[in-house]
Length: 281
Image (tube, rainbow, N blue to C red; front, side, top):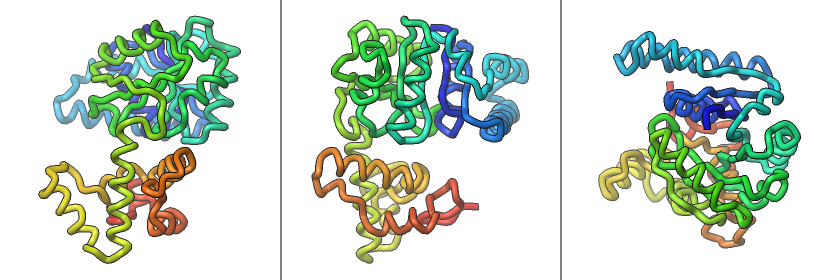
């Protein structure tokens, strides 16, 4: 696999594209507007300039990475891709729409992957037009740093497809784990209820946000407290995943804390808005 098409130029899409480019692949990054792409290009420049300043990259290496990344608002360049990776917003209808358009453009042997963190991979695969060549490939934020990739099989994913993407994940320096399609997969099935319970403790007045996070850092040896982590993930994303888990399982342990829902309604989404459970400059 030498040409990768990334659908989505947001935080995850851009970081994933950069991971592929660092592994020597040509990457096409697509989003729906020039404004989104301009913002992504600016973020890319900031990342590359910082890496050069900190001697993590040479100026020539940064130029090489720039040359491997191409930005577009069109879907047609996907016809040259060996693998498509979708990293758009967590809405099944939008993801399915993109995959259906791509299925009409891409070569039959092209593999489709989704970076979904909660939506059924079997549902997406069934609507993709190539269910045997579809796989969940879930990176973690920040994708350039986090080593794990969850590879989620649908009921129809072929062994050949799984092995090809597994080998690709190792090639780009990640550690893949094999996961069967189930609500929340592995990490979010465990992590999301923990963050949600921390919000419930805050709502009940059991401790301050600072002390809840301090307790988990020092008592459970977590590098980051659950409320800071929720702010990093995005409170809107956390709420969405809670709702998906609850809708899929009807298990009350996944019911979103009302304080979390209020925070999202107030537009306090965490780091990306400057305020969540903590304030950010």
